[in-house]
Length: 278
Length: 248
Image (cartoon, rainbow over all chains, first blue to last red; front, side):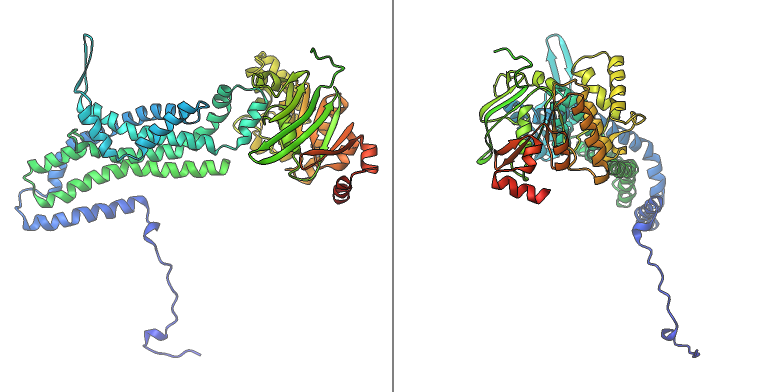
């Protein structure tokens, strides 16, 4: 039986599938973020002095900010390379048979892993000389170089832990099998253990790189002309107009997001792939 | 004291081993002659695996003597690498190197440890793969092989080092029942060729068939031993009888 009624409550309801926010495509999230940042600026722009829209101003400054961002990337890649090299050594030290080496490597790792990055950066900035005199040779230590050194310290400590963790995560049977085949410890490490560790280390290592890249803006606090410093200077040059803050810093955020998000996605994919293989 | 093939190849005297306060071996003595196949049986936790792991110095011992071809293993100056070239080992969990193919697993140690010529080592490895009936699986990675196939690769890997004696540590315990047979057959082939084998096993029928001598261990001591015919029919010790009544 069907009753005719105007009351909507009586009508059969087919509930719609909720569309969750996380179901959005990355570019859709980006677009929303972009609109959220620029929206308020237009509101400001209408009441402010109608010279140039905030967007046009940002457009003028964008090349400089991009250059600054590329400098951030240079710092991140260099600090990562240096930190990885030192951290790998330290990590191997942590699994050394020598108690002294192990203890030393453990202490250095723990010390730098549990130190705030900014404090380490300050240390590198203000305790390192501005140049190094090697007899006749004068090697200058510019600020950006010191920033790289400072940021490579926590990277080193974290890489050290990644190496140690990966080696410890292998089943002890791998060591025993190698030992029973008369491999030396060094051969066991280089031929059998470490090759298996590489894929275990890759995801956390890339994660660390992502974090480091975002931490490079700390260098602005100690005066390196990276993207944050330049953004601050650009805003000051525009007379510190408050409606410019959101577009400018939003632009910087988007730069980092555009760079780090793919790395994060790729890391997740690697993790999944390796989990299947294991 | 020079060793001759007429002497025991492996000789344990009053071996004591403990992990911390836990005593695992409490005075174990046994002799293995060249070409012997001996099986060590006993309840879980009776120290069987520890016993054979001491023979290639994977575990050290606190007291007693282990001689392998006349060489003392319980010696702080022991050259473990030289010892392990003579003593092969196959594990319960196979422990193949997962990042290497089956063939690479077999030929790697001869090339890297014994410094054999690569081409020769590869030819030898291919022959061994054939011997363990895994022809055609040379390029497979361990993850692509069944448990029984992996264990046979592990046996081939151990054989590639041309050891004088091979230790088998419960090598069929982790296998699916249908693949146990192929691994046991491989070990039987070896035994028939005269390879000296020391096995820790739960496969009683197999032990009875291939072993020259059976040792029954419980709580870190050898309770009873003898050739399989007498051991399985006329066990004397009540502990042996009880164990056999449970597993047979």
